[in-house]
Image: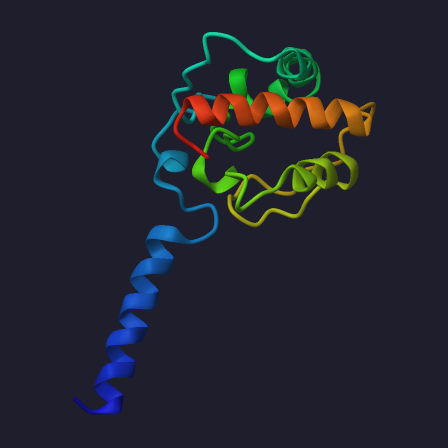
Length: 141
């Protein structure tokens, strides 16, 4: 096979992948009503004490955008109970930096996330613990 044919096939594959997996191109994002939960979340039967505190912080500061139990809101903010936010891809430190400094949009088309005022580092650590425990219950490690 010649190089031109291989490069042409490669470009087509890249273009198709971009159409399907482009930033913000997650299929759930486009097929739901504005504001609808983007994923179904199963809660653990029990949460650790730290995660219980984190849930209260999440409900007070994060749920208005990221939805109940971090299920996301179509057209508003992404679900945090999603493989994109697994610990190997977004560490707990990434949550801390996002809450503190905001974050540029890079996986979804919701726009940039602003900093979240009124959260301490300890608050965000507790919120991250809550998210991690819920992620684990939903098969995201």
